[in-house]
Image 1 (cartoon, rainbow over the protein chains, first blue to last red):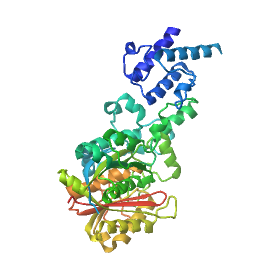
Image 2 (cartoon, each protein chain N blue to C red; image 1 turned 90 degrees about the horizontal axis):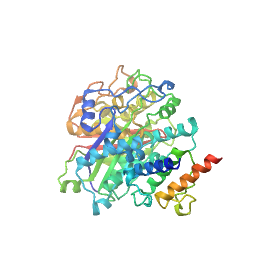
Image 3 (cartoon, each protein chain N blue to C red; image 1 turned 180 degrees about the vertical axis):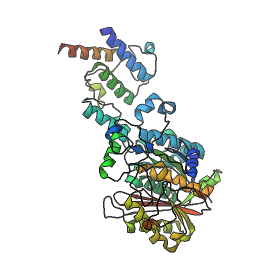
Image 4 (tube, rainbow over the protein chains, first blue to last red; image 1 turned 90 degrees about the vertical axis):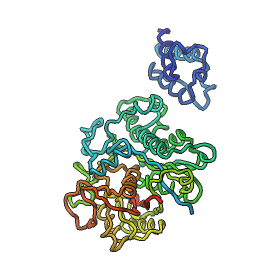
Amino acid sequence: MTESVRDKVIAIIAEQAVLEPGDVTPEASLADLGIDSLGLVESIFAIEEAFDIQIPFNANAPDQSEFDISSVASIIAAVEGLVAAQKSV
Amino acid sequence: MRRVVITGQGTINALGHDVPSTLAAMREGRCGIADLDLRDVDRLSIRIGAQVKGYDAEALFNRQQIALYDRFTQFTLIAARQALDGAGLIFAGELSARSGVVLGTAGGGVNTWDENYRTVYEEGKNRVHPFVVPKLMNNAAASHVSMEWNLKGPSFSVATACASSNHAMGLAFQLIRSGIADVMVTGGSEAMLSFGGIKAWEGLRVMSKDACRPFSANRNGMVQGEGAAVFVFEDFEHARKRGAEILAEVVGFAMTSDAADIVMPSKQGAARTIAGALKDARLNPSDVAYINAHGTGTAANDKVECAAVADAFGHHADDLMISSTKSMHGHLIGGTGAVELLACIMALRDGVIAPTIGYEEPDPECALDVVPNVAREARVEACLSNAFAFGGFNAVLALRRAP
């Protein structure tokens, strides 16, 4: 299950960055991958759609959001957390 | 005051995907109106329109652009590319700072509104794509043009219903004439042929179910179209110094408000605007050989417009030609004046008057030479383009042959 969340998130980010999934490394930030602020909200929308989750993210204060977007790995971890929380409901 | 010339033109509409194909259709009197091809058309009582056919957005824009560009923005950018390629201008430094873009659209991103209302109301979803707002806003098209060509001067969008494009082009003209800008990209766009866009118009009961027949006694309403036309307006001295090909000169503009009725046109308002454009252009009535009419094909507009022309031109009204090309490309609402300016430039440049097609029976209340059904050759020194919008806002442009 965890593996599929990871793969899906990477696929979404890769598509947004116009990269191959293999080029999206866990330690990279979205900015490193060339994703701008609009690309970021579009990625978050795509992730919400893919997993049917609500991501607590406010573009006015991305650093203060509960959702950690500092790297690909942190995004995957946060999405895994949200997916798990949703399953437990 | 400076003189203003047109040095580029572009379009996509139901008659063609560029200027040559559109003008060829106008010469041939070809009709771009057909059965509508869109979602839920069976729930519409109006099922005809002048749609852009054979359109492949993916061939012209990449995936990220399509995510961000509503159909009206796509049409604008296609027309703008043609116009700016034709003008051959590079916008950098001082020219960039003194060049802008002003475009008309009445509805903006109507398809984006429509699709996302479906998402939240019909499908009951609680999440919409993040680009809904930047896609649907009326100034999106003008903003993307500014970004694509580095236009850093005065830029905005105009929404005055059916006069949007004429107001936009009139303001672009005034910005250059008064010395505020050197080059203005201007015109307009509309993409309102969606279920909601047509359903809204149906409600008003002014739409024809079979054809647009301006000035014909048996006319029974307007037919919507879609598309864009974009022009490059340029300071004459700037254009002359760089040896640019000049398509026509913009010599005058007038705008007025009826201050009377939200939908009914006013003869006095229209006549005042026509007379104002002539005065602004320092033209005598007898200088004008052609008028591209607002000519919507509604009972009210066409008779009021003819009466206004008769008022403003006196005896000369019987000597001039007036045609409505909406009979071919439909009513593009906020983009219509822009597509119609193509017919004006054709009249001045090529000496071809686009016809009013669908004309079947003379109407004594429209007793002018409406160039019925067949294009005509004539030498035209000066012409007008009329737009009389819902809300009583009138905008008339005056053009002359290239100096």
